Length: 521
Image (tube, rainbow, N blue to C red; front, side):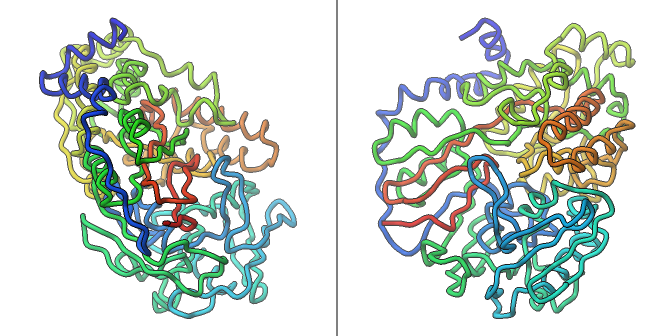
């Protein structure tokens, strides 16, 4: 353990200090844990979910943790390769830019919604128009470049764009490409299906008990051969990672995804469990309401970031499983920018000087928001210990993910900062647009980004050359980090545990597992 890490651990409250040290030494206790009772082969796949959904309507939800639920009930127009996120056919069998502002999709034939109505070009038009124009839509920004949608024939959809957008196919592999049944909404784009989703996905929705369980049953007419791999799926809402690990050890569930990074070595040593791990785009970060009080001043925002030792953050809160985050992407990503990363530094003396310069040399108290699970609380206490050194204090008010996020980003806009995460998007231009564009849901203060930011994001979408795209995205990231519109902390790595009878389960770079191919036996 480095001297710096030891100093930070010693600055934590006694109880939390003991918990941190116990987590870092957890491997030594692996032999004391009970052996996992194997989940029996059967027709129900049981999953440990780490958060209650905010909504089961793709257009209205606001939590990145929703995707793992949504993928079960909805297919997307475009799919992606798990290891690289490269686009591949989904509900759209193929697509082509016939010119820079025209994108034509050819749809799969013979697909139906779970209510028996046909999936066709008119259904796609309904969905895309709903996503970009309905008052209830939280994803307007995703499809802002779509000017018109035409059902050219029953299986052809033509999109006319307001600007070139080579990122759009991958954007349509996310929420915006999840197709809901128009009939289930009464053909009313303002109707909401947050409690009763109907899509074309592997399972048809069965029930949702808040804070407990979401379940579905096989959609027998799914268009993919051999999908789903099991008849029924249940996702049990178990926020605490320690309880999640016990649930898969005992056989209560077959898969526990997004466990605490500190549990990786424990899982790896359990003979009846399989560790599924890998890098992701998941970034722990602080969302900043730059329209509130002291946070209107970029010097204060930068000071809060500069006071944080990210290397120690990874060691203390993630047992070293992960990497410091100096921007909104991991180092391995093709759009990583060394110049942008240099703008995020650990400099407590510089942070104190900025606070003095901004007029807060005598201290600043902030309204902090977060989640109540043990891992989140540990991250909160780490940050409070760091900020105390520059005179910043506060108390985290915690609530479940959907509630805390909804109040921070929604109409109430309570709190100065929210300690949460950015769960990543298949195309990085969507990440930047959603995090920092003035109208974005995830920009809680709805403040305008620096001049040139939106133009740089758009420029990244005008080329299909990866190097050209990376250069434009680097400009956008440098502007965002220079203004400190959010405070990235660390990259989370996927740590999943599966019982021995689970087959064909794999992690993906997005960090949001899909279960349609999983089998038991």
